[in-house]
Structure formats: C-alpha cells, structure tokens
Amino acid sequence: MSEITCYIENGFPAVISFGQPLSTAGFNIWVNAHKGLLDELLFDAGAILFRGVTMNSLETFKEAVEGMIVPRSFLESNSTRTQFNPGILNASEYDPKRKIHLHTEFSHSYHFPEKLIFGCIQPADSGGATLIADNRKLTSLLDKELVRCFVEKGITYRRNLHGGSGVGPSWQECFQTEDREVVAAYCKSNNMSFSWTNNGGLLLVYTNEALRKHPVSGDYVWFNHIDQFLLSFLYEPEVFEGMLLLHGNDENALPMHVTYGDGGAIPGKFLKDLHALFEKIEVPIQWNQGEILLIDNLLTLHGRSAYEGNRKVLVSMS
Image 1 (tube, rainbow, N blue to C red):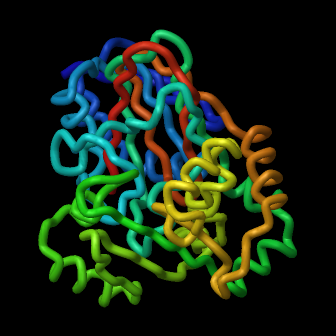
Image 2 (image 1 turned 135 degrees about the vertical axis):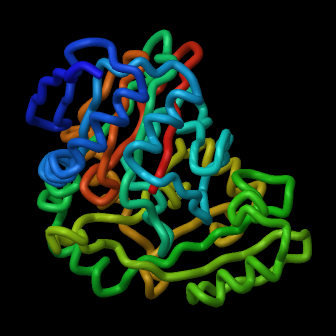
C-alpha cells in the first residue's frame, strides 16, 4: 500500500484530513500505525475529526470503528435508539425538530464509555450538526459555590421505567434483558434502590457524583445528567404541565426526575445559566458523508441541532 498522506490541524476539534480518498481498511492501517499520536491528540484536544475516509454504510462504519476501539454496549440508557450491531447504534432518534443539548454520555450511570465514535453515513438536508464543547472549559466557568454543593451532596436520580408501554425506554430496553433477576442483581451490585410496580414497571432511585476524575490528567470535570433528567426544565411549561397531569401531578411519578443527593430541589437559575454557557461554548460539526468524530467522553460534551430531511449518523462506544 502506498504511503498515506495526512494533514493535522490543531484546535477544537483537532482535524485530520487525508490527502486522497481512503478506504476504511486503509484507515485502520493508518490508525494502528499512529495510536500513540491519536492518544496524545485526543487528550490534548478532547475530540478529533477525520476527513477523507470512504465510509457510506453500516458495514464500513463498523470496520472503521473496530480499528480504533472495541465496541461495547452500556446498560441504563435514558433514550430509545436502534442498535444495528453489538455496540453500534443510531446516534439519536429524538425528535428532529428539537435540539439535543450538550451532555456527556451515560453520565447518570456508574458505568459509562470513555470514548465515543460518530460516523456520518448521510448528512441531513439542513441542520443536524453534532454539537461539541470543551468540558474542561465548561467546568472552569461554572459557579464555584454551586459546584461545591453538588460535590458535597451528590445527585439523586429517580427513574420510572415502564414494562413495555409508556414514555421513554422500558426496563427491558434499559437493561437489555427480560429477566427480572438479572436486573435485580445489577441494581444490588451498584447500590441502586429498586422496586417493581403493580403495572409491570420498575422504579430506580440512586445517588451519583456530579463531577468525575479524568484517568489521565486527574482533573475533575462536570459529568452528570441533571438537565437531561429534570423534565420541568427540559420541556416548555405547557408540555411539562401536560406530562405532569398524566402522572397524577406528582414529579416523582414522571419517567425521570433528579434532585440534590439530600432530596433538595436543584435551582432552576443554575440550569438556565448552565444552558447559557452551553450556547456560548458549543462548536457545531457540520457533517459531510464519510466524516468520523472521535471524542473523549469526559473531556468533550456533545449534542445535536435540529434538522430536516433524512440524517444517518451512527455511534459506537467503548
């Protein structure tokens, strides 16, 4: 195989462009020969965008992914999305008319991926950018006193998972099993309070950290799902009031809810300020077919802008 030429642009994200169209097989050869460079670049930048790879199908995305990570499946998903192969999924099946705000993947869970790989099979007709942001920058900009409260108190997540008919994922989807004993064993091993409801659902209550320590740098970064789980903040007032009415006007009966670890309410102003920061620091990745985005899940938040048309962006995690 002839020598592969590439150009590296430092920044956020770092960009690696190949000098000629590169097959996914050729991409894997290049990745395996430059693992040290990629590890260093990913840690420095938090995200790497690859351009010039010939990738236009599930099969070619799978081949590209397997050169970089060993795909894994993670339990406790808070959204429903199609899984095509073990560890390879649609990036999102959330309403295309709505924006997905910045977040870190599975940060409500004790078990979360270290790396995510996104691949564009088909860009949207309009919109549909993947949004990314530097989590180290975000953490440095947060109100220090409120961050201290989160560190001291932790965050309590409450999930009401239905048994096959309802809003959001079922407990079967969430835990990828039909076996209640498997779910019970998982919850017990992770110190999660759980109870089965009369209508076949599952109630989960557990407390987790608000910040996580990066394994390489030792820095603590913002890593949680508070704004994703607080439905009164996530949705417009009229939408939330309708959801609340359907659940007996009881926030604890909603599909998901979140409080401080001591049960206290999380200030709405903090969440508004958090989303204002998101708007300031987010960087849109306007997709072209074949582009691949590798991110460090602790160092880089991600989201998605609203879009029109058929958009196919896949994701794999490790």
